[in-house]
Image 1 (cartoon, rainbow, N blue to C red):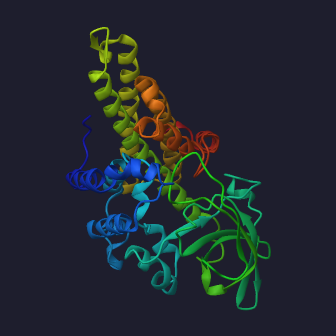
Image 2: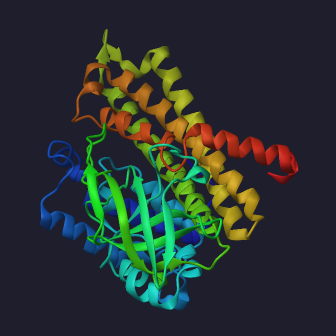
Length: 386
């Protein structure tokens, strides 16, 4: 399926596709049958290759030694990495551009630049049991005490915390009527993992629940200035929602290709399964929705590269997250149906994606949250302002 993208994006698309096909995809079933975990030497090899290719620096400003790729090229990379199941593409950390606006020089040196070099891995302690996706209802607190802040709160679904060296901790500041992010080292006194539930997907990265009880961190660990509030968290959400769209496009493309190949080979009554109209309709609907999704995702990326109005970007990233994640779920459901009983086997890519893609409609803001964001933007700014 051809859509016009820049030469730079095409070049990175080719690099990422080769990496996904040669380094990650061959190990999907092995990971699936081993709780998502690969042999240490394979994981290390995959991480080292990702660093060599520059994947840890694609969003890092050139002034800090990064590649500062256009968002269009970043989408091209993550679209190809999204073709792989079991979160095998999560083998490397990703320093994002907003971090260089948010963090002090000391914080960059201690946390962010080591991420770019592959020496640190982060996790996000934002979601809570009560407010869930509604970050405006956070209950965790950070209270100033001399040269320190004291952090308290329970955080759910702290993705990759079992592999991370530090947390981004989101909290309310009752004394300032504000909210802020804090950088908190893993292992700091007062941090306790109180649950590590199993999830539908089979990832090496877990999603534990952590209790922060009177966790004391230096004031220098606060990210940004008073009044910044949720601005940097919103930056993170825009980035993540767009890349969920990119990965979902890659997953849908893989599913369509695999289902089509199977339907061409599977013989029913002396003819390929692909000649059955019911199968053709499922494939036709899938490829049509993928086409629309790719156009939407790449246009949202180009809007970021153009520097379009930030509020418009925010609503467009929500539209991408909403539409493309739901599209990929529909494609996965059809692919399972095309494969029949084979599509219900864990060794089958359709079965794995059927489980894995479901969470993309929940994390980084549920589909319902995205609809609220989109509707509120429409009501405030009109169709021309979207």
